[in-house]
Image (tube, rainbow, N blue to C red):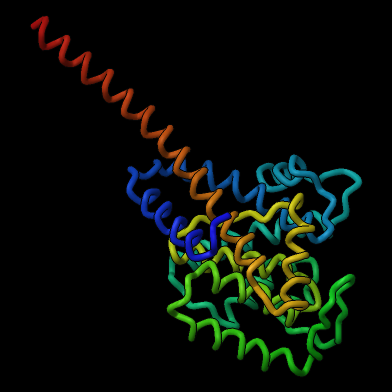
Length: 271
């Protein structure tokens, strides 16, 4: 099994390889983006208990359809997550620093169904069912969020995957909002990865037990390694997937150009 430094170094090498290929066309990029958005929205919402299927999520996002016997809340969770993801894409383009305002703005879109709680730190104590950690009292939330952001920006030399993993663990531990913390946290995680040139990742509903165990391990042993490895593995998977897609697309394009060049040579010979 690779140790963490080797894993992160390997990911950096993969990213360089990915960046060395001829880029995809705008239409190809949009197709991959739409596919990711549907899968990410489905899985992130499902982790939090949303019962819409992947196909139903796709219909809501692509067609704006209403799914019978599903609640308005679940529909709005899909729409809100979609809008929040589009918003973080804009933050990536603007190279915006991670700030309290950015986090609250993302949360405001995620929590579309709860107008009074959007972008507002919680005013009530909360318990996380099954967790070994109790989030801080409400009056401590603004202070701890400020400390979290300060610590994050001070660790400039740390690998981004380790940084975002630790931030995600501590953000969820603070549990700053009354609802929508998990979805907001995973969007912020992707925001920071994408700003560094990494593809966004999709922590799957099928991996939710392992994902939850990362938090348990962190609060029990004060060790973030399990979350760092989980995120690193997902980043690695996404980069390798992009490389295969781009290789395939470039090979097809090269094949088309080769055929056209050969036809041109044949025509010149006939002349």
